[in-house]
Image (cartoon, rainbow, N blue to C red):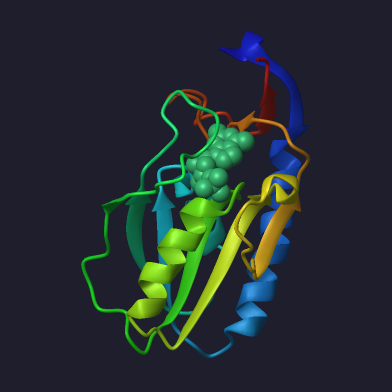
Length: 174
Ligand code: 5GP
């Protein structure tokens, strides 16, 4: 599997140093509050688990899953919610944790659904942002890294369910 990674884009050390900074920023911004963190499965699992261990405030953790690429490298126009939250979020400070925002379709659909349920605040923390590929405009409140248009894997991100366990983020050799 290692042989199909063209190069390391973000090393394990680089990722962890940036998550330290994101954690500090979130601790300052939500000082004294309580958040409901929504992990968008499956790609955000590893990021979410590292991020929340840097946070001081009380957190409740929820998961959602939208349709994935499968073997494709781009999301289709129709994004489906495959697994929804099983609790009321009205009046809560909700932080959606995403692995990567590419076209923006997945997050746009997810945020529309969540906004409709009247959270007190709704913010987004994405480890990666590929703005050059955006089709729908999205406000990302907390971004780990802005990257060029590469298909990346590792640190939770997959290609056809492989590579998620890599501790770094690499560019896949196509
Ligand atoms: P969007 O709907 O913004 O186009 O895509 C968002 C989802 O597509 C992400 O949550 C992620 O699962 C997947 N995705 C987008 N770009 C990449 C990439 O470079 N590598 C991987 N592994 N998944 C990606």
